[in-house]
Image (cartoon, rainbow, N blue to C red):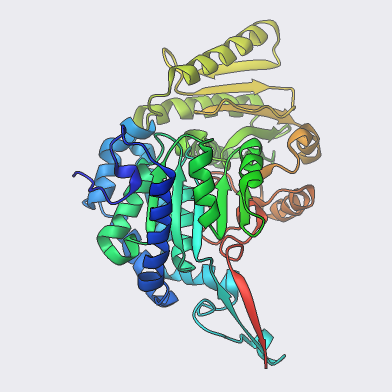
Length: 453
């Protein structure tokens, strides 16, 4: 299957984008949006998105087949990793889940269609309507596709013309999703644009930002600061900066057969999208005093990752990434040789996976690509003290705890500043209704008009 040239990212690699081309593309998107997208109802969009997702879940779906056939070479993810990622993302886009998202974010499924007054507002003789931006620009991070796919879904709900700017060589999966929209409904597809260029192209970015009503961006704090400085004052900016995540396993949870399930769940989180998303764990803190010592947990996790590599290989990584992993391993080989407080297990003749155990609880930034730290702690307070350097930057904590203690732990984590707590094993698989960085995903995009009757 060859993709037609519907989007700028479909142009040959030698093609050069110009500010004039971008200006024309932005103008076309706005005109198409007014004609083809703005009149659609929310219920129409719910059905369209759910039907689109159902197609992506079918083995014979042409765009899914293309993603799995060419994706490993273009993205570095192995085919099983891509399969699991596609199933988890598109499996969330059901009619029920989409309507639940609308109600959670806007109070009513029809809030984007007309003035409505849910019971809590009707008693004050007030109604309201939410309106999305006319032209929405997304600056995609490119490490994993989910945030970009979700941004496109939200933009369809707000009936916005959308322009997705990807980094050089990172547009493959966003393009496939956009092409699947175009294939299902040419008129909706004509309200989307996908392009790629290396960041820092001032002339292109100036043209794009001048046309945008709202810009969303995911990336490093430095990248976000640079984007913010270039935006007109009137342009809304929704930024998702540097975030990290970690796991926490209580002593009471590591009992009998449950311990093996927890180890398998931890391996799920390390393997999902090769640990590259902000929801992936860098460290798993394991409480001392349980049936399984933290060091034993690390060994079991290493054995599980070795089994996973056989059936879900990580895939190739660039030479500089492999060199970084090899260098990091060398540091811990020396430490392990001189202290029983450090141990390391890793794949042989490859950099496919690495587990480092340390008695020192200090939070460590992983070099990712299935490189995980296991740290021993006396309790949660010690873990949070050890992670103080990343306080305010923690996106998700994957928790394995007995039911009676899970709520207390979650409340403690909330007060410490964690935006999301989930079961270990689900860190990279948030529900559709999750609040990214603790903020409303759809609600951030809209503006409100209140009618006081």
